[in-house]
Amino acid sequence: MTPLAPRPRRQRTHYGAGMAASAPEWRTVDDALTAWFDAPSLAAGAAVAARVVEIAADAAVDVRATGARVRLDGHQHAAAVSAAAADLGLAANPAVLAQVSVVVESTDPVALEPFWRPVLGYQTGAGGTLTDPLRRDPPIRIERSAEARPLRNRLHLDVVRPAAAIEPLGLGNGGGPYGLCHTDADGNEVDVVPGDPLGDRAATADWQLVFGAVACYRTTSVRQQVALVARAASLADAAGFPMLIDLRPGLVVIDSGKDRADPDAHGLDLDFLDLAGQIQIAARELRAKAAPELARFVQVFLDAADVGTVRCFWTAALGYVPDRRDGLTDIVDPRGLNPVLVFQQLDATDAARRRQRSRIRLQLAVPAEVAESRLASALNADGQVLDEAADRWHLADPEGNELVIVGAR
Image (cartoon, rainbow, N blue to C red; front, side):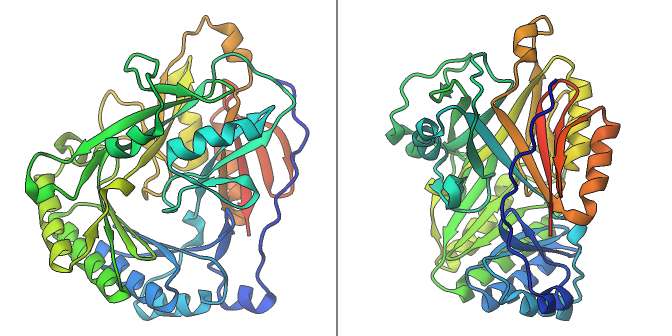
């Protein structure tokens, strides 16, 4: 594969000297000032989330069974958030920070944005980047390329949304074995999958099944929001279930993670429908308003002739772990913060398609001090460097699928 010329680096926001000295745990990851605080339980993560949204109402906080990620729009509240976490006995761990995004190359980027924005339910942000308004699913960047690539891509996306959100898009009949595949002007593919209600009982009416079970609740005050998060965290902790709980301004998203509402995926002695029902009762007692139309799930599919070898590269490069179930090729972010990758068999005799560069690649932003170790892991898994610049490495996996690793400071 011919090495590519280094790509121009995006400008990043840097702290002043005082900021770096007082809160070294923060990094600007994909344009958001970000920190991770280790925590022993969802309840402990919920406690720091409560402090964060009282300090910075516009913060995005992701509560997990092992900690909480905090993203701020600026650095003015970072020191106060760090102090609040320290008061609760939680230590920062910047080494685990990571953000995966999707980059689509096109000879006519302007022609692609009107397709992807409504299909994903995204917004157009700075520099034309398409972003999830809930800041949960991966950003999509559409970049200009002088190279036309007519053959079918090896990477494509799945998006799962409630049927009521898909119908107004007017996509018409899709292709593929399930009639769900749609393409943009360049032929890039996305399977647009309609979700379903979770179960058929009123007890779980607030929940949508979008590969994972998701309940979205609008809140009218910080007090109501943190009360709901605390109740959901307590119920999930009591059940031993590693729920994903995200706080956004005026919103709480409670998510099982992909497939984990199913007994064979979570492997626990519980009926997830019972847990979902208990959380729904708590939300309604607190007068939070269900917003099922906001539920969404996005994942990345990658075709490979040698699935095992390619999967090993991406597991190492992204710091992911294999799905616990036998017979599945999924790899997942252990903290449930980045998109699932799924691998499927590519016809090994399709030499032309294998030689063509994909129009889609992934980008991984990690702290600068761990970027080189992530690079080493990728190279040990048979990756190769195509080009590099300061804090930026452009890699290919063993079959030429591309990843850019960016060191965030």
